[in-house]
Image (cartoon, rainbow, N blue to C red; front, top):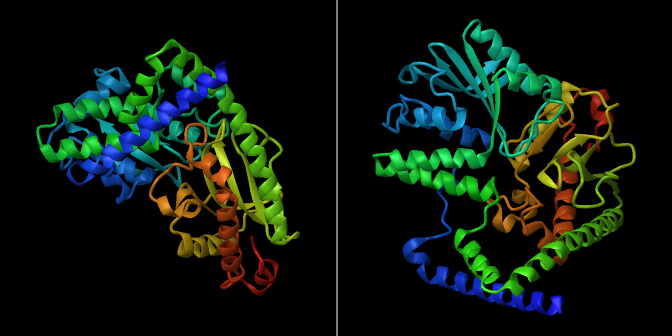
Length: 424
């Protein structure tokens, strides 16, 4: 029977993984297999951009000259002769482009420029890639120019239109680069690095990207599971039965989560807000759920997936509808209040403050990890849903946010203070 074989397979895999975990514990004092340098450093997109920019810089303190940049031009850009004199390339970060825009990484060659927008987790802003393309084209003049988009997901249509994107691709002015391509490049860099400290740094960066952006599980675990699947054709067949059932399991857990979320939010006297598209695991991008603390609030505590299939999970304070105008003064008061409590966040037209770090508030035991970001490939959110812990943590966060925002009107003009005295 398929279900009996599936149960036997799950028992075998669970035993092997548990045995592997025990073995890792025994050698942890000598090898520290789960230790990640980047778990303790700035590991947001700006931190990653700084690391990549330094490696690309021929004058970087890695001391390896232009070797990493040349590898990048060969492996990632794919047209190494297009940009001349890499040894003289000037690399900068947060390059101001078109007013308030800042390009993550900017490479200036003798005969052209490359702009890199790094998006490991965050969502694109309106017209962001369109603005960067126009900036690079204007800066280059008659020279070469190229916009690189570092992401595992395509850019949003609000960032750049599909026809415009196709046009840039046809003229070799735009390339999307996955983080798997980036780790391939970094692996090559590690192999060429003559300094041990630089090689270790690059290897740690690869480890972080694979775990927290690409969602690659521990390779030793993966090998153990693979060996179980391939040891017997019945095991392989059972694995497909499990895989097919997993989507149904996720769907059932998602329904359970939504019902539990609504019930617990209402019990607090708040108003649950759920996007109608949040009904299965194939939900489109910008699907989410949130809490209004009062019926007349025009802003809410909101959780959203900025990528399809429940990926790119983030949270913050968001206006409730498109009819709510952005008030710069109010936005800044809210941003400052949230930053003091939950750390530095970002701001956009829709969001006075938002964060790409859901683990910090929803899984505080593992706050430096990123297991809550991509629900499609991570077991963490589903385990928390099954245990009831995710809804409980959201309710606890809601109480913190409500208490915080009750005093967020400080510094506003009297009329605005009255209007926003119970902001959410």
